[in-house]
Length: 310
Image (cartoon, helix red, strand yellow):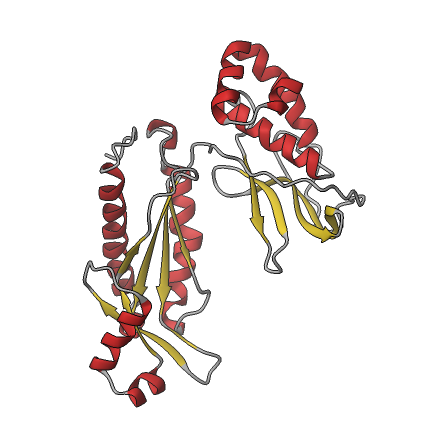
């Protein structure tokens, strides 16, 4: 196992996995993972990350595949967690505390989440026990990814006009679970991880104002300042302020991040969109969602990726 934990690159890790053989290698990796998924410090978390990378290469066998992800909590401190292909939490999830000498898992902000691979351990909330262990070690995040539904749809701002609340709820509770269950990501390839679709609905602000997007249906590159300059030609300063107008492109496509396998797309919707019936909103939302996915796929195809986009 020391060899596995010493590898620095995915290429080296893949070569080591290949040299050790499949079944025996997976058995040893599985045994170690079921130990380190209950990590108590930074070194143990990093070992869990490496084991997830190795198991993703060799195959998870009878285990449920998970990704070991390091993110950032709202206060800027790291957070670490395991997610399955449906974005459900598994095993230990922790928010870390920065000390002068390094990082430690924070008591009261560490939890345990049920996994079918440890059926005897129930979920526990923030009372999950941790012992302070400060280590000056950089927390790693997994560099390869498990097969999962490649279309991730979410809101950037959790606010909207009341008439769009059902749409947002149905996207989260209906559309995303359906995609997670009915997509067959194992058949598509591993060149990409996600096409992340983030949608922005116009919304009221605390009962005393609004943010209303004016939609620009042009495939052009414009900065925020250029968009505002255009907006001032369309409306007076008084109208812009009173109505909370912001000129935004219908679609904003980000670049493909090959190290994460992710491309981001932003979609904007006007106040008029939310004034429609829920049926009309869903019809228009579906139209623009399909356009966003098609636009992302065109950009990804141009990179000649080994992926079955069809």
